[in-house]
Image 1 (spheres, rainbow, N blue to C red):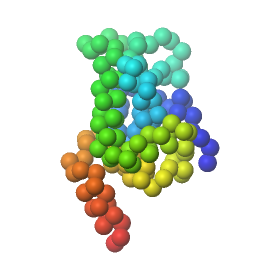
Image 2 (cartoon, rainbow, N blue to C red):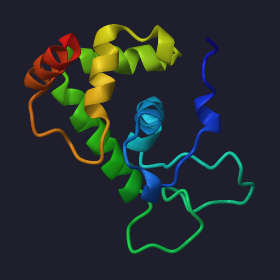
Image 3 (cartoon, rainbow, N blue to C red):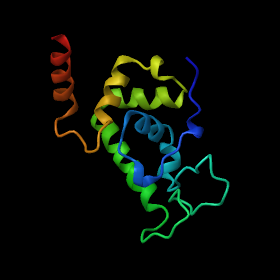
Image 4 (spheres, helix red, strand yellow):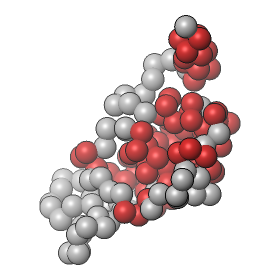
Amino acid sequence: MSIPDWDSFWWPPRDITFTRDQVLWLIYMLPLLTEGCWPRDPNQSSIDVPGSGLGIKSFRAPFENPAMVAAEVEARLQRTGLAGRVLYYQLRADCTWGDLEKPARSALYYCCGWKRKAQPYSIWLADRKDRLRF
């Protein structure tokens, strides 16, 4: 498999629902997001408002959307412990979806979804393994 060009992917902050592809992209862009900058739309040539990813006025400071999304991604990764760190470093090392280790994939599935999982990662992982056996 080829290494995805994460810079060609893009979602505005309002469209983030934490799908698998979005979480992969957000983890890859996490250093930029923690600086308070939203990645630019690769298909748009005009100058954007820094941080918003959009050329519209907002009632928030430009760094707020990236900071909130970065905090949410970091919180989800932190709940997965070592598996989340493996996922982060494998994505930063340009691993493809097929190259991710099993713990990293499990951490990714745990991080996906509109809301955070109510269960701790260890219980969610045990329940998931039980479901996959049948």
